[in-house]
Length: 276
Image 1 (cartoon, one colour):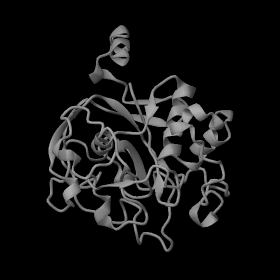
Image 2 (cartoon, helix red, strand yellow):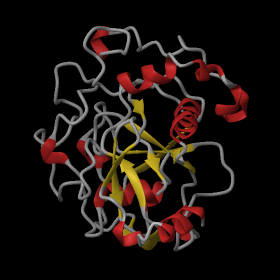
Image 3 (cartoon, one colour):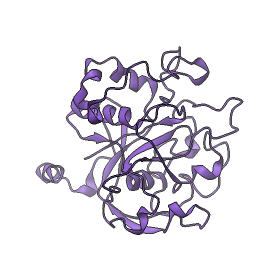
């Protein structure tokens, strides 16, 4: 409601939002308000990926790139990192908990020339704390995308299987077999793989956390407007596949869930959204 009041005050309608914004923490791309078909529209997925259904979303901004080591360092080196109020349940993740941060083979953030690589091994708690920190720094509302927001940003409104179209090859995404050692590549390494709104690496590279609790059959009961997932659960939604996954798991509607405090998977990263 406050965002709408602001838009009216400055003479902008939701349809006239700037196409890009940057609050000093990375470029954000507008995803206009409107409807799209969510879920398996090809009949090649798992039961948890259907049924296909129409969802209507308000406008929002999605990060052009996954959160990088360079981005994470800003949070890691900020005194606010240890502010328990930023962390779900007040449980601050120790700065040295991720084993990948010092690994050169995985382009960990503590190794030379790694700033443009995606941060690896992030759990949901850390991803959420990072968003809360961005909100504090910018005065804007940053958060993890809802599952519906993530899918629309990845596939647009024309029901495509992958962010760029309906077929996949190694010119478009980083997935299993694209390197001798499967790990992250610098964000934006696949310009052919951009989503309809310009977001990069929404298929492959690292898997991305969403804000929703995961429920296998949620689509059968989800609201038609701005769904935010079940009220409770054991797992949080993960989207986008990763460098470790086969091509089938990079489909825009593929979905799975992970334990929020999970720190063991090196293929887990994140992408942020910002409210207008």
